[in-house]
Length: 334
Image 1: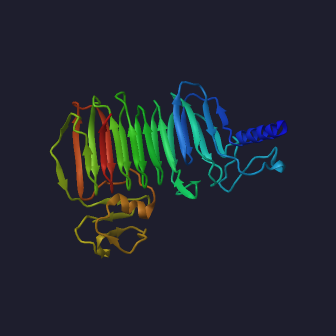
Image 2 (image 1 turned 120 degrees about the vertical axis):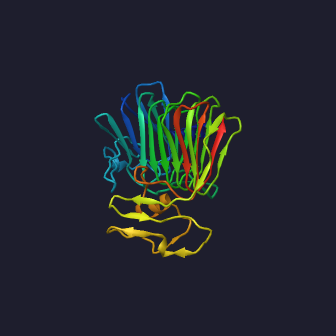
Image 3 (image 1 turned 60 degrees about the vertical axis):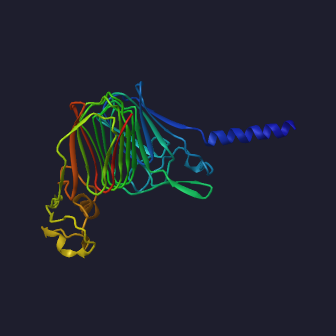
């Protein structure tokens, strides 16, 4: 019996070690943390180090032949942390990149309050967690308790914002954006999704100049907010987009017709659109995304049929922009 207990203790210890949290620290309290990773939680705290942690379960045996070596891949990055990521200082910046396309589990990063966070991830790699033969996407970004500036530009990730003060510039193409903010926020704050919804919770005493817009969805606002809306206008515009190759797309509007028409686009320049036809109702941002990759707010005239709503919350204050092209906007009270 005693021998069996010893064996059981050893097995439990090995299991705990296999699932133990791995950690890497970098002594850095200021500058920009520039991230190009998937499935990450970034959290502000009162410390002086940037702490990287992952809880991926080790399912395979340790490769004894790899001792003293580091993992490299076709990405060009080297795993210098033991976590499957590359962390490199470049002056005031800290660049963090995935070393391989394999999932490393949930990456948690704790950052000092003075750190600014920039997230740029334009790949479409989705990682999945399997539980009882069911798979769920884990391609998510969570940013919380951050007091510095935040910039996010991504293709596929869902974004969650919790108790951040701003300023913030958040853009995603395919993901939804959810945010909960207290009364102490700094502008400007711009939150934009092309294909996903935008759902934001604010303190009712927040002072802001609001700009809310959705081309094909609706705008919902809690009745508890004291908002002085400007005169509501519904208008139909034409889109003008200029990409890096100076190709201009014009004349993309909306219609009740569902017919495909090749005459909807007038093209100038040397670059051709990938699709021979476009369907009525596809707006400027969607078209740019489909044909030229991730959009830039500086290169897109956000236009199509739809509503653009402006107003002053509690007399006005910080600039707060919430937009979605294809889904709805939700503004809730905290």
